[in-house]
Amino acid sequence: MGDMKVGSNEDVLVTHALGSCLGLMIYDPAARVGGMLHAMLPLSKINPQKAESNPFMFVDTGVPRLFKAVYELGGKKARMVVKAAGCGRPLSNNEMFKIGERNYIVLKKILWKNNVMLESEDIGGTASRTVHFNILTGEIIISSNSQKKNL
Image 1 (cartoon, rainbow, N blue to C red):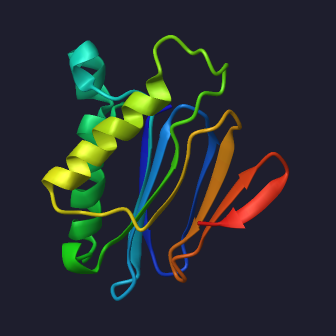
Image 2 (tube, one colour):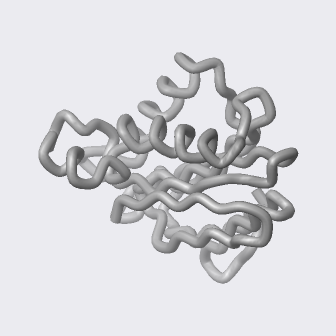
C-alpha cells in the first residue's frame, strides 16, 4: 500500500486493511476539506528510491505531503482536526520488527515537532481496520471485527 487521498464537501475517503499501517485523517471543518494517508513503514531512509516514487508508503514522507495537499485545498493548520488509526500488530503479539509501534512513534514525533495534537486515535491491537472518512461531516467510522465505531 502507500496511498494518500484528499477531498472536499461530499467526498467520502476510504482505506482498507489497516493492520500495522498508519491511517492518518486530517480535516478542516470550516473549509470542509480533508485528507487521508495510508502509510506502511515508518522511515523512508530504508528505501530512498521507493520513497521517491511513492512517498506515501512512509510515515516520515507521507505525513508532510498530506498536510501540504490539504493546505492547498484551503485547509488551515489552526483549524485542523487530526485523527489516527492502525499501527497494530496483526501477525502476532511477538512481531519482531514492531512496524505498527514504530509507525506510531514516528507520527507522534512529526506532529509534536509541528505543534499538532491528535484529537483521537484507534491504535494498536491485532485486528485489521477499514476507515470511512466523510469530508462533509468530518465523521470517521472505523470497522473492525464486524464492529463499527466513530473515531
